[in-house]
Length: 395
Image (cartoon, rainbow, N blue to C red):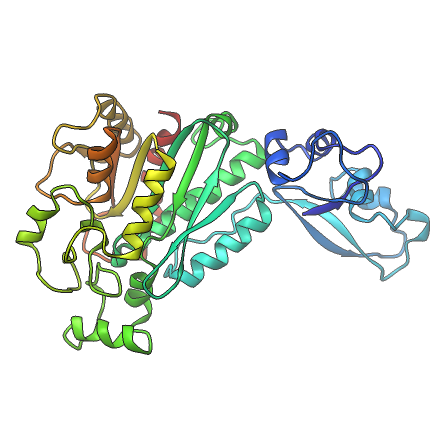
């Protein structure tokens, strides 16, 4: 929601009158000085939207403010040219409305277009979200990173490294929306206030690493050369439910230089719906973008969300730091997932992250069954994983 600056207005005043944390107000208006706002300048109010209201007979600003549980000054801010004395029946004014319900509905086939639509809605409501395109997929779709918070602790989440594990993106987005509502409304998640986390943690999220693959699984092959290539790799079948790879048949989570040669020797030797690690490490634009992001950000910890098994892999060759065990135990306590330190599988994003930085990295396998997991599991997966998301920030 936007308002226009009046004489004497400050971001402190807006934060107080709209009951929004000052840090969110400042970060929603990074180009403005909190103490010296130019008159007439547009200010973003996070966590609010404006709603149109048509004047009825007998209406006054006082009556409208009271019935909508807003202050008189809220109405004056949104309707600077209107006064109660001049209100006319049929006239339309704007009323500020606090957003208390999520806009993200993750419980649906969550393709790249659904993600994009939800992201655009979140950007409008929560302008303190910082966004960056970290690269493009094979077909040119933007790989988006979101950053939330201003703290020195950098925590990273990602989803949909594997195409038929697209439900991970939906779960991440559902929790992200819950976190944003918690911040703007000063309400707890699982009894824990999140506003202190905003000042301690910078959260980095890449919600969909493989958008081409996700769309392939959910919507079928696209027209043109990439759709034809996918069909050839899939032996002519239009059933892509078992497809884990990117659109070129490379498994993005087997692209990292962490015992890559070992995996390459025992995995498919050509493009495949799953498990082909490429002809060498880091050949694909999606995996390259994710590697560069880790190098630029120097994350404190990384959580890569996959499906399925309700387990959390947290070790790599004994190079993981000792505190990783304490963290994964907290994840397990909050989710009932089983921690597993070592597994005979390599070249993954968390493997490479641990190898390169000796910091905590986790592969979280959501849900149980056969991929792609059915949406009938969505609520159960979300409720079990909330504790992991939350603990990743405060641990």
